[in-house]
Image 1 (spheres, rainbow, N blue to C red):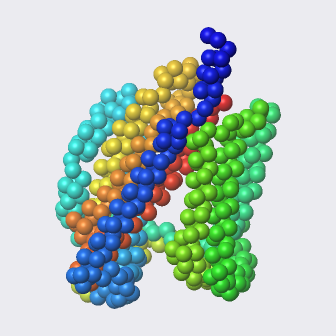
Image 2: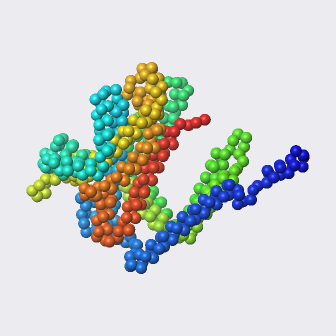
Length: 511
């Protein structure tokens, strides 16, 4: 090949193709076009729906939340709510209680059953297998209704209710256990706990460095817990000294209320720009090598551009799309700071945490569970135990699969050094298995939370059941359904964030 041909070939190879044939440009244009198409479709459908509703005289308003409900709830933080909004809040708290308690109980039971199914004891292994295969193959709704009917066969409520009077009450009205609740001094006590957490973290890291330097057992976790316990014990007695903290929040609240909407808009705009700059800086730092910054690809450049465009979009939304957002932030922030100031105010000298035992009260001819303990009605007990048992059966299989995914050599090595089975599970097998277990475990937590909506079948006052009462009385069906969707979306996203946080912390760090 002649020198002229080689020069022509080199020049051709160095030329960029036209933009309509550039793979990166075409890829990003296709994504932007798809995004715009989806946004346009959503805008078109929303506009058409609003026009059709307006044509039929149906207005989408949420003013019904401040209107009296005129109906009592079976259980919750407020059984006689003044407004529909208060009733929905009571239903949301009931749902969260079942979900949080169910996640904890289902996790403990699922881990025990999953480990038990791998036990060398034939009876334990078979019992766990029967539990899993039976519970997970029966529809959850059927199990909830069955437990509801089973609770109805329990004895009537008596003044000396058992099986453990003052501790555990089981009757056809449900289950009552001691209720742990925060008291007046809780928020001042939290200051001691926060200080203990900071000092304990410092001590823990110091003990870890000593262990790395000397190889001795320095017990960093126990040291952290000991420091936290000392601060908690001191704060239990001395927490009233922080009553002056409320005045600080009052002062901050007064300053916050004096802000103008323009200042808040400027702060939000600067925050958007700062967030975009921070992301771009981190992105470029990941591309930096000892030899310097790697050459940016077209894909990298588009990511940086999109970060800047996203910040500009946020600024446009704050200034043009929803100019009233700044006023809402000022009003809501002032109210929040006022509530916090009241929590830390003077005069709160009670104990930080209190426990109330379940009781029985008799108004009229028949005794009923009293308000002191934590009461699960017949429907509440059915929903709680139903979702716990059903979810635990799936968690058990996830745990079993995670344990089997750990290389057999790890188990043999632990046995070779003489570790007991419990120590081997706690120190060697489960820490590695949880890396496999955690992602599907998060899915089961999401399923449990959403399955609580089946409480409507047994009359438990969860968010869905209370919402049904609200739209039956107000006719605001679409509004209530939208609140259902937002509530469960918020719960699901919260669970996903927590699970992903631990998933990232537990993953293997590669060099």
